Length: 215
Image (cartoon, rainbow, N blue to C red; front, side, top):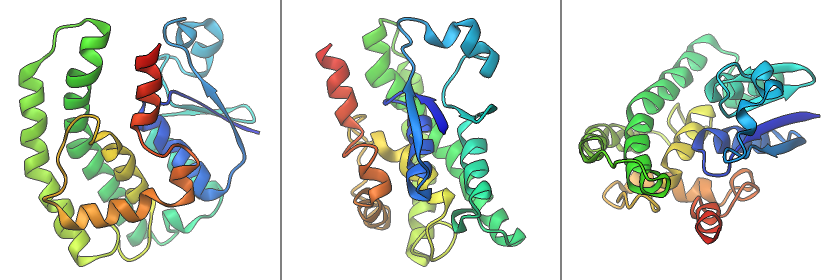
């Protein structure tokens, strides 16, 4: 059985679970305890030399990096989420990269410094927060415009590009990032968050965060 090593507060890990759920893959989800340094054990480092998550073990075939993982799973299962047509696949890759590099990196700056830095008692980088908002203000209108022209990022069918962006934006409410000015993103996001592949993982990103705060 496929094993997915991850953590509930990682959008990268949730992305892998979203895709596995959408593909109907049966898997074992292994939560990694960072406080106990489970990611630094010799056993884990044999699977992932950098000791990070997500990681999958597909009957002894280990893959890390979330975008590599979701492409592997979709291709292995011959899913339309990752088209076999070269041009369409390239469009999907284009939007995966665009969202990961421009939207994802901005979200990471904001989320880490607003939510996680105070918890782990490291200095908050206020400049990084400002930069994060600046990049979102620059690039989210491009996403909104694309979703005005098409139902989904890469056309009129859901693909890996949509699941990638859904995971990236999942922490918006927690990080107090306002999306209401982007009507098309809001419509698109609301439609996807009621799908089984999402609700099988969690109802909202905030659920595991509340559990963490209660500890």
